[in-house]
Length: 559
Image 1 (spheres, rainbow, N blue to C red):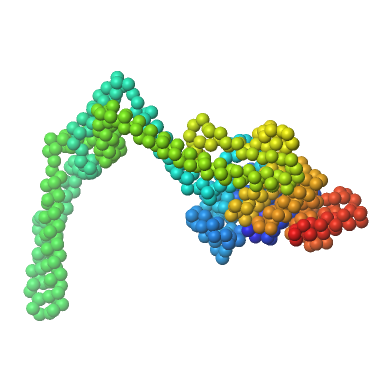
Image 2 (image 1 turned 135 degrees about the vertical axis):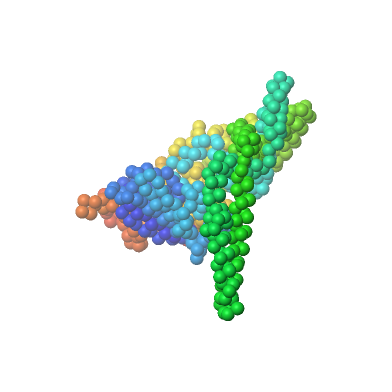
């Protein structure tokens, strides 16, 4: 359930905070007061697109925050799969909107916009002003059927997805490997050349690094030799070398060690230093020998490095990559040398994968059709509740041209609005107002199976009036018994059904226009109903009508 909405610096909104409740939350207000801006801000918090124009004039950023109370176990499980954990039973989604970028957070932790959208799809369902237009596109109908049948078809649908992926992979490999004999001969010749060139090089992993280090020493051997010789002179050779001076020190201390323990300890330390220096001098001498390179050694090292670097330019950045490339080419050679058997194997695998796809797609289609019958009847009953008195609703199944990751079904919603008329596609029959009611009927049916607790309807009343509006209001109240519903409306019939009534107002203070929202008590709600009914002039008769409408709504809600 959506507990709290906090909006700052968006369009005409300076800063507002709304506490929503269970049941049917109705938002009304004058045209242009900012009703759609408030619900639009919800869409922004859930990852919707925006432009800098949405930011309030002079503001550096806009901010929207939604706090949901989450108690449904399936929702909690789905959120945990996204690594989202309710804190004290709540999940907070927020988005900071700036001119060129936005920052999305869940429970204070920054997340990618894709994660925000996925979390939102678990927590809330928004029916926008023009969403019913999506019913005009047949491609959307299958998604509605599958959403309704989710629990029944989920496992099989996953099998179809995997089978289709497997089939497409084998089909692609087969297509890529079918070549004529002359092409194969050219490829074999080229592969043999590459493999032979790499094999002849007899590369060893890590060889290039060792050679590069050796080459650096060779190039700088003269300078290295000079410095090593100089260091050796200072530490080992001559009367003034460190080694000779240490020997003199040892002889001097040796004459007093019998007189004092401390002198004995110092003598031992100096002997140890002398030993370390002797070890150092031996290593220095060995290093000097290692840096003595012949011209032939230098030439061989340089040639080997050039050979390896040449192979790197052709086959990989490292010896490991070159060897891996060679293994791949060898594998390809094996395939081409036994081509007929290889292609036959691919055809067999593709055929087996296609059969598995057909099998799973058939299972999926059977389950879909069973669930579609239930959905079909439920939507038709829902449409009759919405003042479609003689309606017939059907879901037509046909086989698609090709298998897809969704199976083989091509689904289309069909409807007949008048007696004696055959079922026809929605796009060719329904008007805008009718489509809006059809979508409401679908939402009502889906809500009974869906775990989403919060439903938002933005002007569901477009194109309806009179008894139809009354039927729509009753349907909204019915959904509100089991779900939290937040609805913007211009119709008094729907507003009268409110469990909680909010008024959206626009005011100009000190030359600055702002949109605000406040919750109405019973008396204020009746006054707002009277405004909707009576327009500019609210008479006693209009007030009485508003009171009566509210009393009738309460009676209907209590049924």
